[in-house]
Image (cartoon, rainbow, N blue to C red; front, side, top):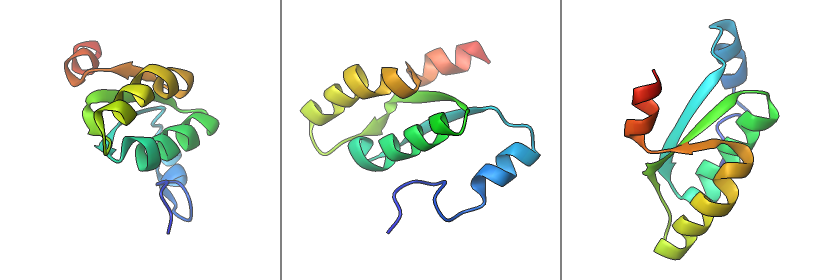
Length: 87
């Protein structure tokens, strides 16, 4: 099973064909699926925004660790309101 949206899909091709350079991420299983997709997008050169209040982990501790430690390494962590204000 793939936990990254870029693996074994044509998502990268579709985004590039449409000139998309920025990706906003939300979803469940912060410390698995969301982080994997975040890293994959970052490694492909996208500007990644991870929406802190639109993600969830299986525990509050895992969520806080991801927000404080992992998100800043591979993305710009923002709330959805902060993200929308930048549009």
